[in-house]
Length: 290
DNA sequence: TGCTAAATAT
DNA sequence: AATATTTAGC
Image (cartoon, rainbow, N blue to C red; front, side, top):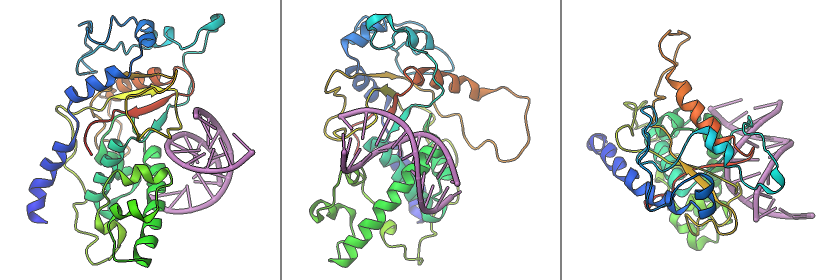
């Protein structure tokens, strides 16, 4: 494990999407209608406008202001005016890439430390809540359980990849299958389940990595894994940029600093953007990694 | 109407 | 934090 310590981070980092890789994709997600609605000239010629210092979005073509979000409200027939701010958070869509990150985090934490809170911190994905992780973890554990049962009862196929031919792929497994499952996940041999560091240095992706967030109209993604960036039908998604991780390990105690409310800035961004229609989908951009 | 993913409640 | 239940979009 020693040699890995110095390498895992680097390897992991390589897997992460580059901002440059994210933008092109996100642009394809913008339908003409949406572009017009948002006053976006066109996908190929973004307007180099303002750049907020606290939201270091890569390139910008997206007005991430809440105001524009509101005015862009979908639909519009009849002049129906929808409440711009709904209090509910958008539904998070677990893309294979996001899931990979999740698995990666769990893998590096070890089963023992892999609890929602810790996983969330390690992932350091903006907009991701502990609840999101907990819910996903629940499903993932369920998946692992089933995976174990099928693999050990049959042959020695302990690899998750074997599920392809195992007849296990009821939709949900699709996502999970997209990411390799570390061996120790399947057999909790207490022999070596505690070989990982209790904590991470913090801020795994701080410099150039950032995850884009998309709000759309399809919470239930059935064919999501087939093709990314394809609105399929009349639906559209609106990608906007999120800020980098700044929510590191902060509140450990009850001490309250009078410092600056750094959090409020990003919270506001996400909040306004996501709350647009009441029920929106929040997802991280798919990247070509897998 | 049923299924599934994700949210929410316990 | 884990698990159970509800919500919500196809």
